[in-house]
Image (cartoon, rainbow over all chains, first blue to last red; front, side, top):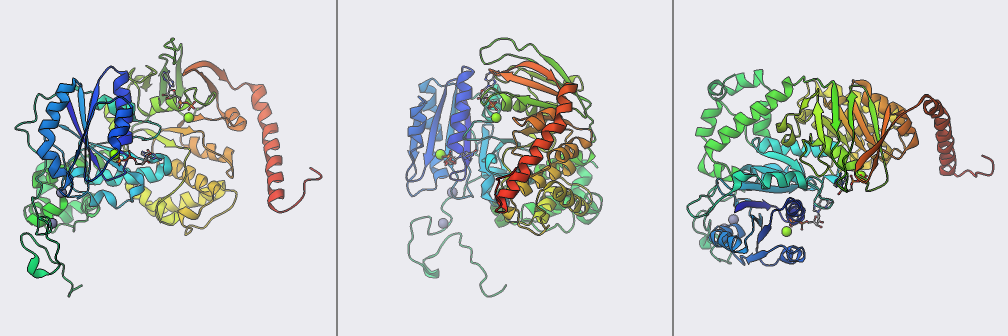
Length: 231
Length: 330
Ligand SMILES: Nc1nc2c(ncn2[C@@H]2O[C@H](COP(=O)(O)OP(=O)(O)O)[C@@H](O)[C@H]2O)c(=O)[nH]1
Ligand SMILES: Nc1ncnc2c1ncn2[C@@H]1O[C@H](COP(=O)(O)OP(=O)(O)O)[C@@H](O)[C@H]1O
Ligand SMILES: [Mg+2]
Ligand SMILES: [Mg+2]
Ligand SMILES: [Zn+2]
Ligand SMILES: [Zn+2]
């Protein structure tokens, strides 16, 4: 089975792009499935179901969704094999900008939209910087020049990625993307033993572990203080 | 410069030779290295690396890839003399029996009802189709298959697109906007280009605008004029694709002249009779395939003047309405 990890900020167009890409994959005779990871709530599974796409949903609750993702990705992969799909796509919203679901030797895609501002590419961490393919959506809303400026900012932070423009509503560009998903090089038997592209910090500080009280005496672990006295 | 030197040389010297290397650090929000890039990476703290979200080795690879990509961009002088479209199939799977060669300096119009496949044809050209799109068309450049790596590097593609949408979301003045666009294309002397583009845009626009106007405050006509001038003078792409741009408020004839001026190939999907007659040929699309090729005849060309007069007349009437006049006599 082939496996692709798709990540990106909330509302960047991940579900729309995945749906259009699966449409193109179906037309070329490939069966696709989706595992969707989110924090508290998602309706995306219904959108996939409505198109007859096998979908598995996982909610991480209070955990960082990417941590939850790694803890469950191997099982999800096995689930996909049982569904008999040719290609399994994971969708996860990058919420903490520090974690990333991308796995070595597994096709890694980051979806980001033109409306997010030209300084966004440099703010997004490994989810963007370690992706093989960066999809830029919502190009229909801005001019060509603005698309180019945005794409060049993406290319500066991840010069090795293939950068593509896909319209999540009309699906323009999705066919082209599907040819990369269908590439045989993405074929894998198991995820066991594979490794993440970038380490995820475990609980960084006491607040990650559930602390609610404010004040220095409650803070332990990896705490960084801003310098409020100077500059 | 080989990889070894690139990483070991003092960054100030590197910058003298390749000023764009600074952009790599700036666009990641990093300070400009003192000493060599290798030293810079070796001295990055754990904390900084974590913030960056990248492993040291990856960072080095990224830098090398960036210098490669931009370096080849600034060297690029590839010339395109011809673009060939070899037919595939229409929406019913019937053969599309065409084989057209378009030469530099030609304007080709694409006409047909909504949904017939005009945008798809433009997309085939943008993707440099090799029988691998739903239309099964092949696109050849200078007689050969295109370089497949173009597909995934927007900045190397020899194709520029002027799309329906001319909106802006960035909070910048016209001048600042064109400047960052010029910088993103690594053009030399960006300031001079900016002045030229603003000046030409003002020649195209019905109503003039100032370089300091925020782009979000430009009228439809003004932003179209700005984008056309921008494409004409910033983009080195020898092929220009235009998908049904609205053309109210701009001088269409001048706009096309600007775009084709530098020996470009222009393909334009349109319903506008004036634009259609300005083309050398029209491809008529039906059910997803080119069903007919019409060469603009002399009789048609002769009618262009009449059409332009009609158009001017309508425009004057529009202006009279705008100025609160009545149209009892026209
Ligand atoms: N105009 C426009 N809207 C888009 C595009 N792609 C997605 N959207 C819209 O953006 C919103 C969020 O998209 P969705 O796929 O749910 O994003 P996700 O949260 O990343 O999965 C939806 O309303 C989509 O219809 C696009 O290319 N253009
Ligand atoms: N030869 C073809 N084979 C299959 N599908 C096609 C073909 N030509 C066009 N289409 C599809 O038809 C739809 C409408 O085409 P489009 O190019 O958007 O039309 P237009 O721009 O003329 O309104 C698109 O989904 C496009 O991919
Ligand atoms: Mg979603
Ligand atoms: Mg169209
Ligand atoms: Zn996290
Ligand atoms: Zn924490």
